[in-house]
Image (cartoon, rainbow, N blue to C red; front, side):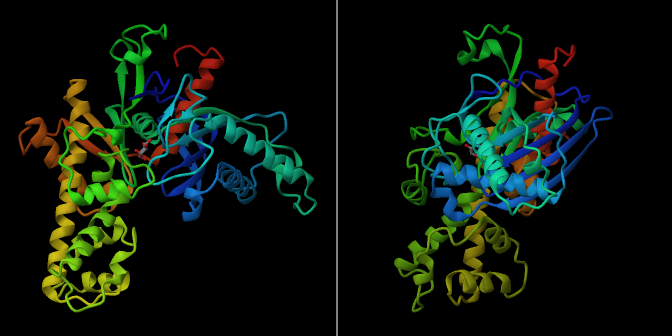
Length: 432
Ligand code: GLC
């Protein structure tokens, strides 16, 4: 449960132009966000880069260099012109657990979602990113091959990182900017987590902060780490295997049951186990089943979605991914397993949201959800809602006081809103 130093939901009148960098589990997004300052409107220009697989287990130097060069490309592509005197505020969405003593600093506690980059844990990621951006500018200045259009090179890049933001908090703020009923921001994608606003007198970590008891603070729950001590959740042997073979065994135990990164791998482990026990794909070469993480959550969604009479897509998928020919009953079995895996994921995901609703006694609100599992899986929003109603004891039909809503434009807009509030505060602007 990490205090984030975001102390209010947006007013909807925040304005200005911001750059945002968003390092998630799969992509790096670079955006320019224009908050119009009225009618809760904004514009976004965005580019997305897939994070190379080998970068995820490389070094800090490579990570920061990658981010800095994506930012430079963004400037080049969009011919963003910067006057040397004009400082551009940048908000950095960094979707990993950090300890923050202020909005614009944060020490990475530990990598999650399969990342294992050396030289970042225990360090201030804002400082290290800032230094990398500085280096990039200086290196580019020296290079003679730079074309004249790269304003970033010609005039330098007076960037200032004004906020470090978790994706859940970004999601909460972005959605609250356009929808005042939003009280929770959540991610259900490669990882899974949520953020909400808490009273400071309910936050033991804020005891000595000097903030008043009824002042609010956004909490990044980091509840992917729930039950690392294995006291509550029923772990299967496949969960244990996923945990043990991950770069951080014993960490993120709840997340490893719920999040998209692990759903396909769960399916692969089950099939590989049954193959080894001669229960499935008998007489065929099962070596393709031995390759970790070949099956992603998208393929799992496709398996579940196959409504064809002869289950053609499942058969094709098994062939392409594992190089295995399957008959009808095996394909049917795979679809049943895929449904079990996603059903467990949905129901456990709903528990996290239910816990927050109960903790704050929220009975009428919107929960903004972002992430590929939520948006790509068939009927996921309905299925989560169904589970949520069951946990909270709400009537199955006719009660829509709590609604799960797809998040607005991801966390970039939220990060910009947070930057806007922070800057307005710095300038002593009342009311923000
Ligand atoms: C992981 C990260 C967390 C992030 C979540 C969703 O749980 O630790 O910070 O919010 O993934 O991306």
